[in-house]
Amino acid sequence: MTPAADILAEAREGTDALLFAWAGRLRREVPGRPGEALAYALETPGKRVRAALVLAAFRSLGGASPGVEGVAAAVETVHAYSLVHDDLPCMDDDDLRRGRATVHRRFDVPTATRAGYLLVPVAARVLVEAVEALGLGSAALGRMAGELFQAGGIEGMVGGQWLDLEAEGRTLTLSDLMRVHRGKTGALIRASCTLGALAAGAPDERVAVFTAFGEDIGLAFQIADDVLDCTATSEALGKTAGRDAALAKSTYVRLLGVEGARNEAAALAVRAVARLEAAGVPSNALGALANYIVSRSS
Ligand code: GRG
Image (cartoon, rainbow, N blue to C red; front, top):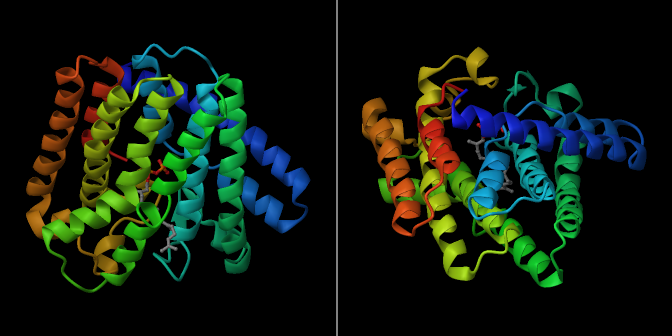
């Protein structure tokens, strides 16, 4: 296995165990359909790229505690909520996610809407337990929660998605599109790298290097997603291919062509890895993940 496959498999194993345990807890806490919908959203088989980034950043700074898997699970919980809401009819209106029916298709729109909202405080609870397991104090918890939920909010994921929805049917400039992509997708990926470094107790100037790495690969991830949307099949993606064109979205492919978009993503991955090297914190696992993010087939 390549190092990327290794760290992704490890992240999947550890994170899935926690997410499935949370799904069981939520089924008991929230009776009936809403509890079933919460569990359905958490038990879907994601690639766990964000979880792998948390783990790899943590390890590259000498972190060793298994408690970090909880931090990865908290990020994946925010991501899971975003997918539930992204697929709703009022957003990207999709039927297929992770190879299965989307939550509103499997249940209904009100249930999916509520389940999505409910996952946000669940993510906070997952993070609190993770920080306790890592033996970090309340200052670290405050900082990590701030990073995660700021990245998930109007300055990050929600803000980017908002701009993305408003831009449907319009052609954005490259710099406006970059802002959308950095927000809707890049912010949570950047936060994954930052949180891994914070979990390892790294000093601020070191954390900033991982944040900058995450900023570049976060944008690269969404550019690669734009490319896959028009070059891969729905079967390979586990979600409906060709959705960007159907919704008349601005994408890197629309502005730069497939090759231009691929080149841009590859250049960002190279720059991200160079940042780690220049700061004296090279990481095989993060390098492999950067490469995976821009060359993946799903
Ligand atoms: C209220 C405006 C508003 C927004 C709510 C829905 C939402 C917040 C944000 C959408 C964020 C989003 C879903 C962006 C796309 C990110 C993306 C490329 C997802 C696919 O990630 P992968 O490929 O998926 O890692 P898996 O399934 O492997 O986890």
